[in-house]
Length: 159
Image (cartoon, helix red, strand yellow):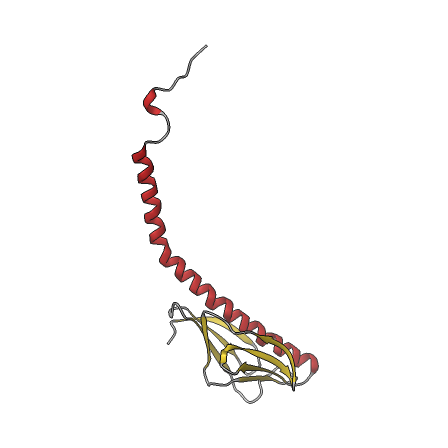
């Protein structure tokens, strides 16, 4: 029978090796934090732009479905404070205030109205800027062409 005993000095890790590994992990974590913050800021701007896009698509769909006007109206404090979708005086849906982003409409309009054919009324095109408040390099735009179709694009840095 063979006896496989390990020599006394070869068991496990030494304290110095363990400290070196912990320090290396700490350095890698510190280096990764800025890019993780950028990732979070980008995702926040993207998610909130998609929320606005979904609202506009829903309002357009409702206008086509009922063959009448449907409006998306900014809350009292502007688009950042939320918005409502309404058919005349009837509120169909509402969105609470979004946190961590600023939303501005290029022409300063507080109402987007779709007619029964799904087209914008009273506007050639509308463009919203969605910017993350913690990282102004993350900007998305929600553009609505005259036919009423909205789309989201990455637009670089916020003003």
